[in-house]
Image (cartoon, rainbow, N blue to C red):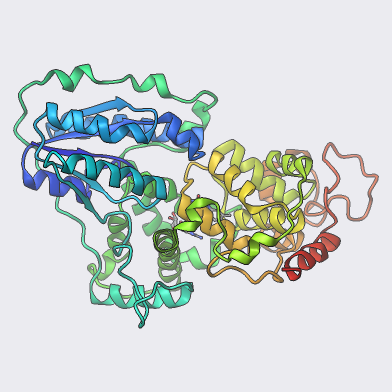
Length: 473
Ligand SMILES: Cc1cc2nc3c(=O)[nH]c(=O)nc-3n(C[C@H](O)[C@H](O)[C@H](O)COP(=O)(O)OP(=O)(O)OC[C@H]3O[C@@H](n4cnc5c(N)ncnc54)[C@H](O)[C@@H]3O)c2cc1C
């Protein structure tokens, strides 16, 4: 009997570990519900809710394949090796299969499981699944990991030209297994773990199921990818794929995504338009940050990539941090983004950059506090991409923006939300202002009566303060 252990890969289509497990013999599936561990990782309630909803959908898919799914409540991962050993022995498991996960705690959990199970001759087979190319395989001429995106991307393009990663064939239903008490008795009720405060309005924004994710991908590729390069930076347009949440918990695989992107080229690497290329580059940014996480695990331990940036004198400014978190900074584009995050669990990429840079440059608040807040609220929260995005904005990361290139949020707003419609949607107090005034409502008249805060930071002065803080190190 084979045991397939699902983690951040909740799908039956094109799942490397599931494919190998089913090829080796009859299968049983396992998932651990670990709310305490998820809380330690700052997983957002909306993301946990999304995960639990998809788990129900996965169970139905597995039922159709006659693969029983055992769901156990194991609060912390350090209890997983023992629980899995017990389960494997009770079910007479020959091999345990799972897809590799890259965070430090994930690697530790898997190493401990592997060690414990090996003592009883039950191997844990781990597969590369989450990335286009196995971590550790994209190397420069001296066999070192890349630290710069453009060189990493060039290497990825070369690999893609040789061959695009292929999807695994569909899995056929297995012969039903004889009933085992564990298939029913060890189950926990998923409803018991649904986080409070996630609303149905939020759930509607993020439907689950593999079919939905594939449809979302198809719609994006049919209708939007061609215009992606021109439109992706405008937060008022619905021009990006919104697939990150689906890729992150594995409802969709990265191979399905890349095969979809090149479907009109019959699965060969051939770039037809700038939109397609720009979107591919975003997928490679995702790839880059996952490889960074593997090669430089300090980023998983709250350490900056550039160690000397630990010497920056961040401000201890609880009130400013709170205003930023709640979308009450008095800088409309920043507040719009922060409120979009609270309301929907998602924020447009351009606005993620603007809000992040405002926090760590203008407010000079430690990027790790922003990283944590994003993780606690994003439905697509992912350690590698979130950390990479934050360290890029804070100029502490691998290939980050130079410290002296500080976005001015008002100019960004005028450029990327020229009509002010994005601000109007999320900051209704300003909805009546015209396209000129809305980006900086108090610019001409500080005594204007608006039910909206005055800016908490003077953009010019705080820019100079940030430059000095960075120069000082
Ligand atoms: C401060 C900050 C924090 C971020 N936190 C996260 C996070 O926790 N999780 C996350 O998945 N992305 C994160 N990003 C990257 C990016 O903002 C999101 O991936 C994107 O907005 C998701 O929307 P989408 O699926 O419509 O993306 P699309 O524009 O359609 O892009 C396609 C896919 O490419 C990947 N991608 C796009 N941009 C990036 C990027 N800059 N870095 C890595 N991957 C990228 C995502 O998987 C995305 O789904 C962050 C960016 C910043 C600046």
